[in-house]
Image (cartoon, rainbow, N blue to C red; front, top):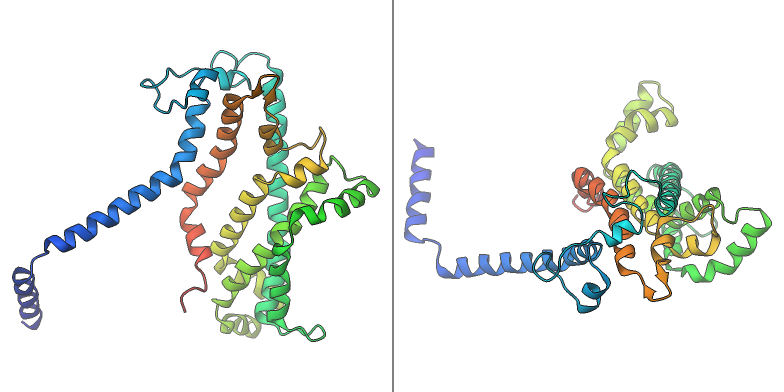
Amino acid sequence: MAITADAARHAAARRAHPPGSGDQLRQGLIYAALIFWAFVCLFPIYWTLTTSFKTAIDVTRGHLIPWLDFMPDWKGWRSVGLSPDTIFATSSPRDEFLARFYNSLIVSVGASLLALILGSLAAYGLSRFRYRFGPMRNNDILFFFISQLILPPVVLALPFLVLYKDVALLDNRIGLIFIYTLTVLPIVVWIMRDQFNTIPVELDEAAFVDGLTAWGSFFRVILPIALPGMVAAFLLSLVLTWNEYFFAALLTASDAKTLPVMVASQTGSQGINWWSMAALSTTAIAPLAIIGIFLERYIVKGLTAGSIK
């Protein structure tokens, strides 16, 4: 009876105060802002995709809408051997593209996995144990990791170039994996430490009571719970290493050259081949976009861990 009376009062209140034009205007402005922001975010991808189907004159004239401003052409995809009429034929540009794509895949996945392993161990230690390194404590050590992101990559160019030359890691995928691991390791430590902080310490204590060691508790209890954070850290590292250009251009020449270097090298005697660059950029964007769509919930959950207590 009380529930029925409350429902009747709420219904009467809604009839007495129906949504006004002010609420509708507010909702309309919110949707307009969201649509505008979606347009701003997606327009570069749209421009890249459509440019891959343009000819030189369409690019210079800034035509945007296929079949209205211009007729789509396979020129960009044909230049990299990925058009319908060349996909099953022998193509040197396609062989080079596949080699660069393979290099990017090996380097980015390898560096992300290595950074995830090292970063998870470091983050678990900073979350569960108390360290003292001179005047530095746990928070100071974490800040030291994060502060490495402030250093511009160009400052490290000459030291790494000399070091890699001495240890024979120039133009080598292993060398790129090592340096990419260093670049994304602070981000992994940051994300995973927040993820571990959200997991109650009582779970570790219960694991110790059951006879597990610190390693057993970490691998069998904590890591399965921290899976969303691990996925988010891995994907963020994958995106950063997949798109990295500076060190790939500096430390590689031919064998270990990655896809971003190939994209940036699309120049000819007549200038930049925008259609070829757009086709290569589309193939570079597609894998990350597909992964992001399917694993979106892990990314959001992992990156927001620790933001709400």
